[in-house]
Image (cartoon, rainbow, N blue to C red; front, top):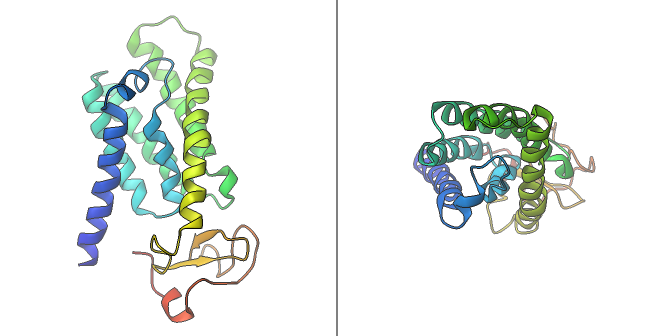
Length: 201
């Protein structure tokens, strides 16, 4: 049952990413040399659940297949999302959660995109274009989503192996944090200790 719930959540995240990328008119700003991929707002989700790393990778893979820019975009773009999602899952400061996504995509996508599109755009300009679009998506849309999930953690599964510090930040209970909130170093919890010993589903 747990595996089925995990598969369902991964599939849902992938589907939402795909829809937010390929649905008109969002598709028109999702693939060009200057882009704001609205679906990248979901890249904050690995800070909430590790399942999002796989879900976002699969969603990006599907979206890049639909996008039609070729195998380089499918492979490198999707792997960039996978790497960014993994790095996001390791970030402790909520305000820095979008940073890996901005940097990884600016450097990876910003490097190959002018090449496959045949554009004479200088490399540093392409990095800035992609990075700026990621800033809008992740900080402008993703960060509010992250704090919304934080405020509503009780209704959204905070009991599933997550603790809550005095600052209100909900975080994964693991050896990585040592039972201490990474944001404020408090040891206050929103659930009973018995529940907190459960691993994150």
